[in-house]
Length: 155
Image (cartoon, rainbow, N blue to C red; front, side, top):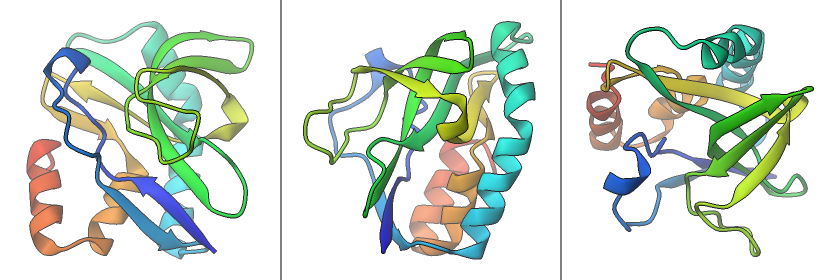
């Protein structure tokens, strides 16, 4: 069994995004480093939602990652948070989904229990959170990992 993970966070706000395909990496289910990343993210989810409700100076572009179509082959994808309430998040897909019937820019409703990761941008350049993306860095080429670290402010 495999999972598809959207690698890029699409951290550039929508007006500046380009039309190239989003990087996606397929990984086998059960990778311990991914399980650890998901655990860490879920533990921090309540604090993430508090931060979304009252962002600090320079904090913006709040995203969650979840399985778009749970099943045999999962597709974990990023979505920009636009509203919260009663244990669910309304968000906009920021990646190009593989799953038919979905598209970038589409509004989705995500139960908190389905969220596996979160992120936000600090001071317009550093990505906070994104634990699954950090775990994926060891599964891509060194050049891809270096480019992601630089684009996410992790270098």
